[in-house]
Image 1 (tube, rainbow over the protein chains, first blue to last red):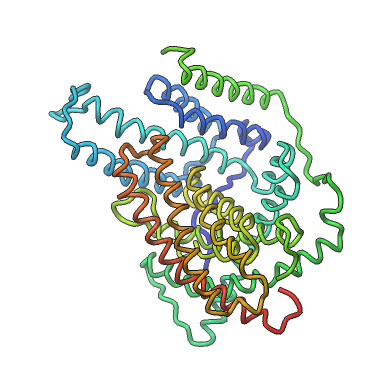
Image 2 (cartoon, each protein chain N blue to C red):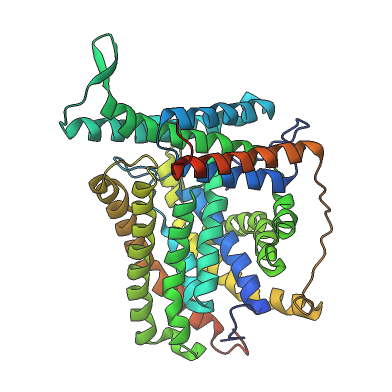
Amino acid sequence: MSITPRFLSYVKGTSVVHRLDPRTKIVFILSSIIYISLSDSFEVLLPLTFFSLLFYVSARIPLKEASRTWKFLLLVILVFSGFNLVFLTLLEHEESPPVIEFYGIQITERILYRAILPLLKLLTLGITTLTVVFTTDPSRFAPAIAKLGLPYKLTYVVDLAFRYIPIFFKEMETTLHAQMARGYKPKGGRNPVSRILSIVPLIVPVSINATLSIYDIADSMALRAFGSRKKHTWYRTLELQGRDYIIIAFSIFLLSFILLYKFGILNI
Amino acid sequence: MGERSQFSVTAIVAMGIGTALYAVFTIFFNILQIPGTQLVAVRPSVAIPMFFGFLFGPLVGFISGCFGNIIADAVSWGGFWWNWDVGNGLMGMIPGIAYYIIKEKEELTSGKSIILAIVLAIIGAVIGMAFAAYTDYIFGYGISTLEEATTILFIPAAATDAVNGAILTPILVAAYGSAVKGRGRG
């Protein structure tokens, strides 16, 4: 039985989005989250949905690399959330004027704003974050966060986490094989649920081993004087280019626009 | 139990290891969606940030839960939701209260420590998931009424996380207590 993550997401490429500085992507994603959170109508949200799609298309991610993640995301957003929202809105039995009608199905104003708008918000957020996850090498996040001004100790947490994730996947596999050698029979086969449930017995041994190793790692870092200085330099250097400034300016525009709109200074 | 500072080298490493561990297990458990809910998965792995909070303090628990959830959601779904990340952080932070009560490693296997792990895991799950579910309603992330937030988000998420946390956190605490008995540190 092999343990490997089924949708690890970074896809190598040379597109303009791939070449963007990770700081730019973080700024764009944060401003998009605020914009989506504060938008309360289609007129306000749709332009960002359009830009998010443009952002995704510019990344030129091959469909075969992204299809598994897309299928899952669309299933969760459109099927699970969509059905929940539409049915719950219909169950409330509140009168609302129909806005669109096709093949006898009426979309009322209430369904539009209480079911379809939240779905569009989820979809827009999904498109933006998916693009960033697909186009950013995980090892570039830590220096980017550091350059954004986060204390380097906290940045090192991100760096350590990304470094140890593959190690712990390997550790899980080793522990599983060790338990199988002692007679443990994990449920395999084609059922994905039973395959995942067979991982539960690994939580305690893998976590305890990992926790015991913390002191050894901390000692070796302390011996190399980690934390003795207030500043820290990074092996990977980052430099903002012209395209980064354009996206950062756009992010600032998004933020200013939504704040002015929300405080009633700008009317649509 | 080692250095007792929230920003010591040990705490920084614990945050990194806790984040990685929580992310690694959660990537798998994210697939176990509860039918009729919205993105709520059964996650036995919630015990990891709770355990790290219990052992290394509230800040370590918070960072492990928050950052671990960001990475796991980003890897398995290609996206993340800030309020659920903070909710997961709170789940790890609240068991961190034990850090100020249990001061000796010998106490980790005591009855007091086990009961504390169960109670704090349940409180952590309830507070953390309440924050996540009701902020979904406040910001309109696919949720339009308070009843919806309660029935399809808060109750399934808090109940499953509380049960998983209440079972696995004391097991992890006791197992760690037994493992470090006789060790010079830990």
